[in-house]
Image 1: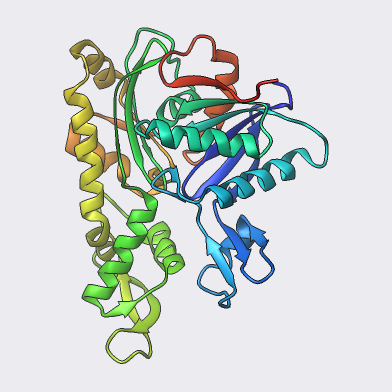
Image 2: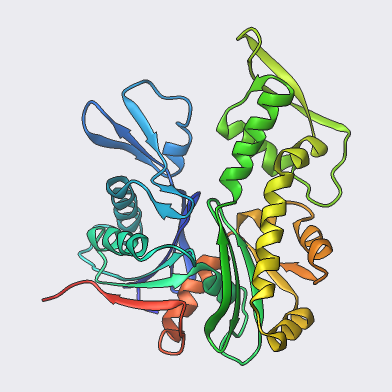
Length: 337
């Protein structure tokens, strides 16, 4: 693949860019804007480190929510800066494949395309995230064989069944890592009367989330502000606490998987039962998530190798297969000369 070809996994939580099958950039989808000077103060990891720690004139912005762009200007600037970080100062207009959730609207798709164009793309291809995840995991989706993937991202969970290079059945639910974080914040507010920050909630999720065998034993503490007297305070943390916080969200993901099974042809269900369900995305890092979904669905599950980079790797493979992929891959020419 030429260096002019870039794959972009524009996620709610992270933006990953690949070139030649290799991830060349992985940054949080965050940008900091100076309201006084009207300039970008930071982006990516540097901006993420500012969350909850900035003065009033610095706005730390997440330009995507639930898998779609909610702030076009900031999303465009973030993508532009990430592309420039990859290609340097060379005058290059790359071809770009961008991944999108399966159920976003045409207006939302157009917003993604226009953002990539304004960021310097020559041609934009849109690829559904579940298709990219399967390709990134090494699945041969061009054969007449059913594959199911559950891609648990930051803003959405996309579930899809593919065969012969196209999506046969799919569903998307606005439930992912960011909602898990919000649920943990709400849980500690309600049960411990402790207000914790977004970054603290994410840290608790990464360290203590266990979907299959959560222990009730106290494993640590979390610090925040007491909602009773407004003073600094702390509360205990256990795997059971985190499971209780995100349990309803996990159930929504299982319900989405079951709904996709209901609209999948019987022959493909047999293939999935034989092959198992692939779990990708950041949510796949939750301990026991594969066994939890397997228990609830009765179908074996497996975690993709490097689940965070799975979708991004799939974009690289998609350049070679773009003429063979069916629905789930859309070419959009962006320049008219």
